[in-house]
Length: 213
Image 1 (cartoon, rainbow, N blue to C red):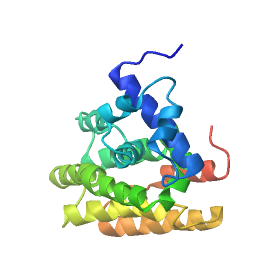
Image 2 (image 1 turned 90 degrees about the vertical axis):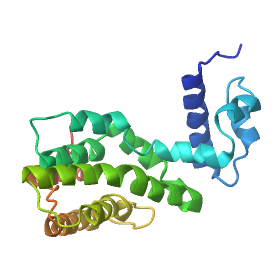
Image 3 (image 1 turned 180 degrees about the horizontal axis):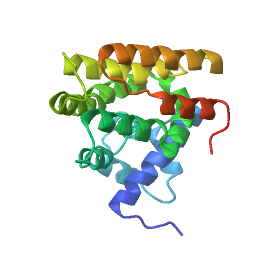
């Protein structure tokens, strides 16, 4: 007997099934029929009710790599924090999110798909970078930051903290990754956004060395 889903559950189920198939078979070799066949009774019509194409599905899969808007709103609501502190909090929340990290590790093969990579870069530009700029603007107002070109710096910050650390594009050993973290810290410090402090460096080192609890 097939399971009944509400709209949100249907969307989540389609994305979950599609993600597994994209990882296993590759985006190009996965068909809509493959997805339908693994949907526990849901029809092709159920897919097209929520997604008008396979491209729309991979866009939704890509969106899972990014924090929910609610995360930004929660951080923004902390009136007791400076813009810099909110920016650090955002970086920690994003970097050490176990669910995102697990999904990202499973999805590395999708980076080889040009459409997926382009959509990821667009999400960086259209979703995450503006949030970083919001915190930078706030820091400029409260005095915790002094950034002359918030828009450009927010975009560079996003590129440094996301694209440059995609191991599918830039493979790295643990030692090389550690070096990249230090270079990223130097770049961000020079840009006037000292997000990566000693406590974050220690936490990253613990994770890379398998000591994270």
